[in-house]
Length: 313
Image (cartoon, rainbow, N blue to C red; front, side):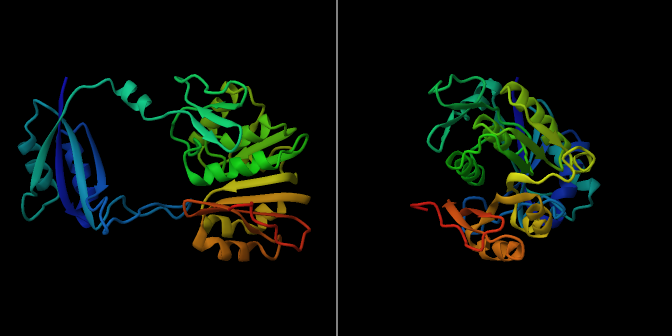
């Protein structure tokens, strides 16, 4: 079976309404893209927890609607434009989408990832390149954290460089649970993960079971009712984004045991000083390493000395 995509470039104020209207008039699925992608005019669009953008659209948006090949694409566009009362019928182009083995195509885009000295993140359909390494079997999914993003890599490399046998670890904003699992496989005695997204918690539980890692994962409200409610941890790692990290400075610092370590990522290099300043009343943080414009900050509770950066960072 083949499909046809309707491609419409349109202003931001109409993108979301047109997407909804296309779904109502016969489209099988609709996505919105930055029409300036790949050019100097490309605009980043992302949200942070509690600060999500009001609409998934750009100043110059591209709406792509997937339709059955036999559908009347002109009629679908006309009906959608009429529903949202556009002054003129938008210009559009058609793209044919051939039938493919989508599972195989998707799998081909994800190969094993080598991180640090001895860590491999391996999709379930691949063999581990080095069976003697620290292997994490992890498939791409809805929860953030497959090892491909620089912030995840930085945190994993920090954990590998600072093994904590018999220590306790808190992964706050755990996503897929990958950092918690790395800590556990490196010998941590007790590891806890927390995330605001129920899908992330479900994914993290599944990943921990697949990797035979004994990790407890909780939503924040549940976490507050467990035996860990007042617990302080030897290592606290949070790979989120700068704005929520600054807001959570008192809480995350308060979770670190005396002499324990705090590791933060999800921070752009230009944001490092302001994030460190938010934590300065509680714990002195310094840049441990930088990768592709992102940094990992770290520090130890009770130390007045900003820790040195990783050699070569």
